[in-house]
Image 1 (cartoon, helix red, strand yellow):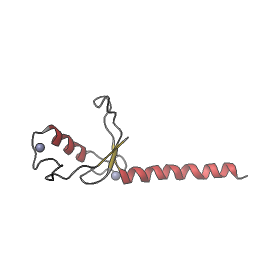
Image 2: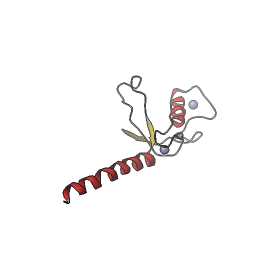
Image 3: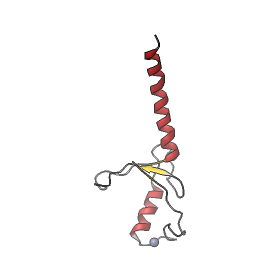
Image 4: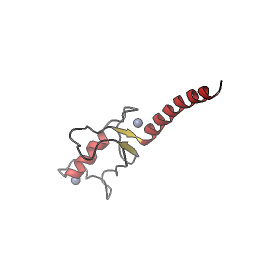
Amino acid sequence: MAYGLLPEPGTDLGPCLPDCAHVDCKQTREQAESVCRHCGEAIGYDRPFVHDNSPFDPLDAPATFAHSACHEAAFAATEADVRPANARRGAH
Ligand SMILES: [Zn+2]
Ligand SMILES: [Zn+2]
């Protein structure tokens, strides 16, 4: 799981405007167009996101992207599901 934030196109660190042939720019644009697995919206630019592709076999394992806010919300929801069950087990 890696955290990232895509710089906006046209900024110092961002991809060129408009479409160009640079590999780095192309990768950035592809990441920005990737869909969040939680909310279904594009990852977009200047918005924190997480992705859990393996750096060792990026071709074998397609990257899955999620906004960090969506990822944390989903994680919090999972925690909330677990906690009451544990509490119930402890309290007779
Ligand atoms: Zn470029
Ligand atoms: Zn999202």
